[in-house]
Image (cartoon, rainbow, N blue to C red; front, side, top):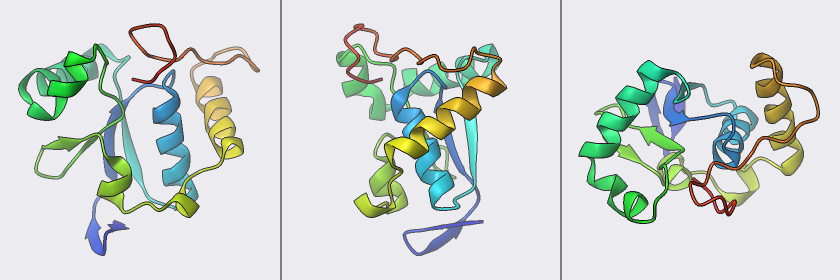
Amino acid sequence: MATTNGTTRGPVRFYGMNACDDCRHLKATLQKNAIPYEFLDITDLGTLRDFLELRDSSAEFDKVRAQGRVGIPCLVRPDGSCTHDWRGELGITPDQEASEQEDAAVLAQASAAAGAPRGGAAPACSLHGDHSGC
């Protein structure tokens, strides 16, 4: 059970993908703070279907959709609602965030698990192609 904002809860669940810089940063921060998590990888078609159902029915995504963004990482609360403000939701302070080195370690681990060549950088997941985020 993870402790966040003074409450005990199960593992943090979030939708994302390994090609997303923000998702890798969230993973690294969770690992740094020993917060258990469940990564819901939207590159899996079944998970993508579930994510799109949530994305299409939740007001949390209104601004994201208007900006042409994907909307990840997206934390799923125990009640099924979601948020993109993972720092606020988890009570993460700047000194608890992962460093670039920790992000790189998470990327290397994720790339190895996915069978990607070593040393390659993952593309940003912005739909606009401007590397401005997801």
